[in-house]
Image (cartoon, rainbow, N blue to C red; front, side):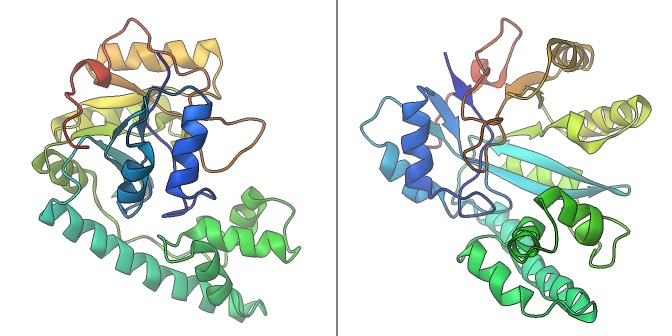
Length: 277
């Protein structure tokens, strides 16, 4: 069974519409899909309509940005009520902060002689959740960097001239909002935070104490050793496993459902009824 419980649409920083992403998932023979846009559920209604009558089992999802010590940690919510008022209040707060941060980033870039980036970044967001990746696209399109990652390394990343410190909620607050909305909280891509083994274990302890129940251990871009390490951590901390591509746009390296077959180890798919469609 092919699953993908982490992907993005144009409602945040993906390039495909929710309908197009559902069509691509079907083409890739994905059977269970969660669209997890950053700090918004705006794409879920369109995705549900696109998936109606198909073999695709679509569940509600979101990826909530949080602050943890000096790190940006992402918490995925799965199978929650997308109309839950407290959860949407939190997401709205994050959405407003994203706009304020975008304005601050644009002002910092303007001080470096790079004008007009806010309008262009908001245009790329197209009414969706605006983020640093949209500014990275602006800088790449203008030829100021050769790749999006270079935009973070030179301008947008921590310690760089256009970096704006975050005002996200805490890990515990995100988990509480997801759980209260009837969902399950998952620690997203633990390998991407570049944490030492000590700090990763500290994060897993605090995540679980706060009510987190699962962690992403299976990605389409990992070798056997990396996957086994994460699966072992999940077992050690008694966390369910989840699997996701973190798909944002079509590429040679990341694809919906690629390498995300269900392993024998207990996963979120064994503990959810997929009720919140």
